[in-house]
Image (tube, rainbow, N blue to C red; front, side, top):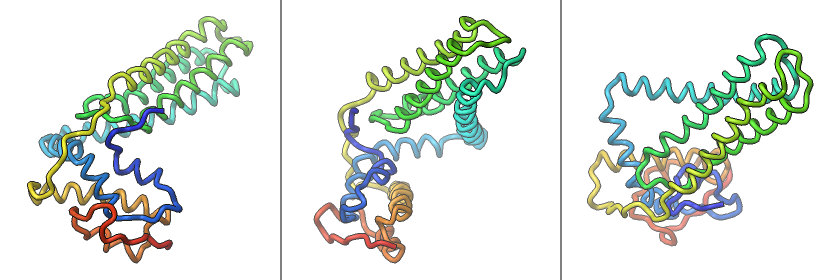
Amino acid sequence: MPKAAAIQPNEWATIHDNFTPFEIGALNRVVLDYAHVELTLAKRWYRRTALGKTVAGLGFAFTIFSLCAAVALGLIMLTGGIDNEALLPVAWIGAGLSACAILGFFVPWALTPYRQWDRTLNGIAVMVLVIATLALGAALVRRWEAASNAVLAVPFLLLAAFAVGVIVAHVRLRVTEKPPAVDVASLTPSDIEVLRKVRRRTLKILRSRNIVAYKDFHGYDDAPFDTMPGSARRDGGRA
C-alpha cells in the first residue's frame, strides 16, 4: 500500500505504536509537515459564507447517511430481505447512495492541495467495492421473484466498476512529494491557532488510545512548535 509523503496528523495518531514512547517533537514535525495543507484548507473555510458552511455540513451528513445506506444495501442483498416490486428501486437507489458515499470522500480529497495518500478514502472505496461484489454475487446466485438475475446485477456491476475507478484515480492522482515547508517564525497568530487546533485534535486521539496521559495533555497542548524530535523528550504515560 502506498504511503503519504506527509501524513495527516489524525492518521498518524491512529497508527502510532502503543509501545513507542510519545514525543511532542515528533507530533510537531508531523503537524508542520502537513501545515501547508491545513492552513490552505482553513483559509478556504473562513472565506466561505454562512450558507457555504451550512451546505458543506449538510454534504458531510449526507455522505455519512450514504455510507450507512451502502452497508444496509449489502445486508439486504445477502439476506434477501426484499423480494417484491421495491427490489429494483432499492438496488438502484442503494447503489447510487453507495457511489455518493465514495464521492463524499473523494471530491474533498481531489480538491486538497498536494493530495497525499488517504487511508480513509482508500478504505471507504475498498469497503464499497466489497459490498458491491457481495451484492453482485447475491444478485446472480439467489433466485429472485421480483426481477431477473441479469437485470438485478446491473447496478452492482456499475457500482463495483465505479469503486475500482476511484481506487485507481486515488493512486494516480496522489502527490508523492511533501507540501512546501512552513517556517514557524513566519506564521501569524491565526496560523499558529489553526495548527494548535490540529495538534489538539491529534492529542485527543492519542489520549483516547492511552498513549498520552490525561495529566500530560495540557502540557503537550501548550508546548511550542519549535520543539523537534529528540529534544525535550517526554514519554506519554498511561491514563
